[in-house]
Length: 334
Ligand code: DAH
Image (cartoon, rainbow, N blue to C red; front, side):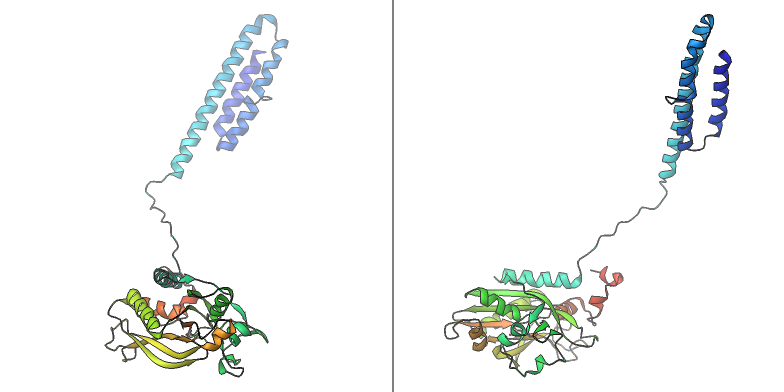
């Protein structure tokens, strides 16, 4: 009977030589040391062993079990240290993790919003899909005004458009609130334009509106000037030129002295020393009427601002399309 133990031992030793992986080692463990393994089975043979051999049989079998366990542990340990040293190569260069960054337009919009918040403006929001009424009608666009023309406006249906500007948010806010109002509304707008360096079928505006009793054009000038100074520096001048918008009277377009040459004249400002920013004006009485405000009691000013335009000036970018291509080589720089 003792040979049985000898045989198991020889077989076990031969098989340990061949183990090449932790999974093979596990198979070996199950085969010999598992609950139904060869060694455990041998223990159940003890009842068949002649009485005088029983002590020796038991002793040797126990020894075999301990040896097998020790061998198993040793092989396991060597596999583990080997795989650990394989995993940890201290000579490898470190893996750099890349953090994302905010899109330059988001950064610019946040900066503009921050400036106006500090000037006491509340931030409002409106839908990008608008009705003809909010985008045009309530803003005093006559029925046959060229801005309603298919050329500029992307229509969803006869009376529903992708908003062409953020001005409709003025109407939505005035409809739900009584004066005083002091708000800005940032957002995306859409126009039927062919993309080129200065045109994109969608871009971003920030609308401003202040309504109260006794608001004057001087207040508008003051706010735009403050903005220019905070955004681009105290030496920036602001110029207002007469213009026309249906929803303001009088209307202006306003320019900043060129942020690159500080007004001296360069390529960006085409030698004029000025860069065009957007439009503004005093809210037209008809606009007040369409929201049920008394135009004799209240006055107000409104202004637009192109976020993309401001970002192009801030970061010296000469093509608006680059904002929307999402080339990481460009975005990584911000
Ligand atoms: N909505 C105009 C545009 O998209 C910009 C504008 C002009 C906004 C005059 C105003 C304003 O609030 O008073 O071109």
